[in-house]
Length: 117
Image 1: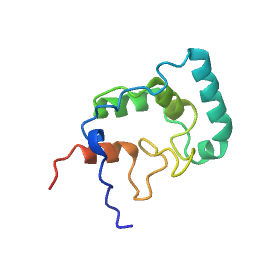
Image 2: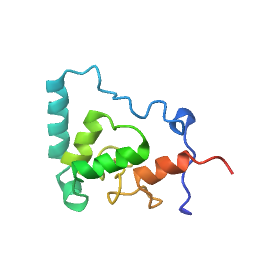
Image 3: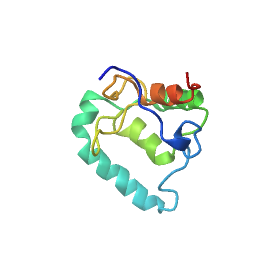
Image 4: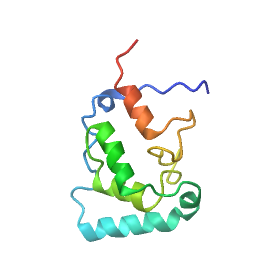
């Protein structure tokens, strides 16, 4: 890889869906169970990419310009800063597991906001 960022699909760059919680219709107890199950499966990732503090998540949200969905906020601040999950894994916010290009989720999002050259 050359370290360049991938092209964003459609509305990602405009942030249309960024703050939507895919689990918004799921009852709270089911969300808590999901977060607990993720924590059990992410133990090795948490040792390499420990969770970031709630104030650090708030700083990232301020830079993003929107709040993360509650479940994602819980993952980053209570489980691990990326490094687990299917496929390429959850990408860390800042200081967590980077994309294979070395970029954090925040850096990728900010790059997608830049005008095309």
